[in-house]
Amino acid sequence: MKYIIFNWKSYLNLKETTSLSRLIASFSKSKKHKIISAPNNFFHLLVQKKYPKNTLSAQNIDLHGLGASTGSLDISYLKENKIKYCILGHSEVRANFKDNDQTVSKKFNLCITNNITPIVCIGESKSVYKSKKTKKYLKTQIDNIFNKKTSYREIIVAYEPLWSIGTGLTPKMSEIDEISNYLHDICKKYSFKKIKILYGGSVNLDNVSDILGLQKVNGVLVGSASTKSDFIKYFK
Ligand code: 13P
Image (cartoon, rainbow, N blue to C red; front, side, top):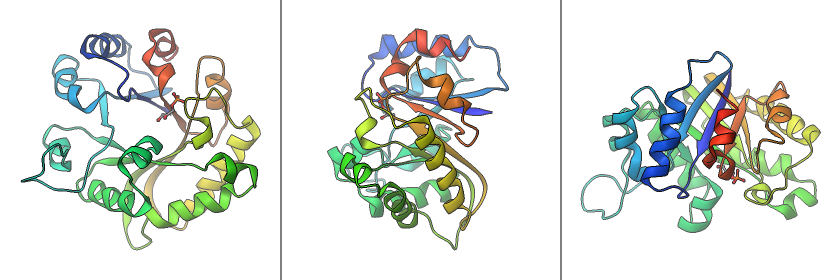
């Protein structure tokens, strides 16, 4: 079963979000694909009410807690509303809201203690990629975020090279394969029941079947292509 996660970021308005959610709800249950959509955080409750069988993810949470914190999204809201997944450490959140591995690690722990499955995004810059230090960079990110003393139920890691997000560029299939193998390998020193390694960054109709054909790639995290009904219909 491959995980197909649609990160709709802030691309869609309510009407578009509802329409794509309706399309997903019309698919019969598949053994091949598990579809999770991450609408803008503002729209979850409405989508959930209209299409209760759709699986939803939040796009982020913050660490300010409940109380006097204007604009926050606390983890308890996810829990209360049965949102089971949360994207963490996305490069856009790292860039716009200054999250770093330490912040991501705290959010990760919050997800774990609240039984929310974290979708942890990691990925190297173009200069790290060019200097062939990708593996070392990713290992440091994993080691900064995971904890050897904790037993995890389910974790999802999305390998999203920063230079690939929204650019139309992707690593070679052999590189995606190699990195996914490597991530499975280095994660073995942590304790978990289930781990999924996903690839994200310029996934589209032209490359998705090759990427999903890689045995160690357990799924894809898709941004802009996932806002198009033609792409979504591929997973019908
Ligand atoms: P694109 O698919 O638009 O490159 O975005 C990838 C991404 O950021 C998914 O989280």
